[in-house]
Image (cartoon, rainbow, N blue to C red):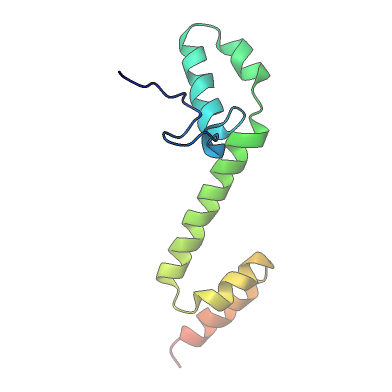
Length: 103
């Protein structure tokens, strides 16, 4: 006898999976995309909480990629990463560039 599980339940557990619960981006974003394919995109896009999910998640991912790239290519990145967050990197980069100039 085959057993079927709900999308929101983990097999073997009677509890709900928080990542796949209604209201999470992993469920809402694909659901919005599928509903748009049915032909009513203006209703889906107008009712969807884009600011809560997509922009924040995209901004976080872009920030992570930029910072990981900086860590890979700038050898003193840990110190500068903290200064970047404080928006003090421009003077520090200028000092670094001056130090790298030939005498």
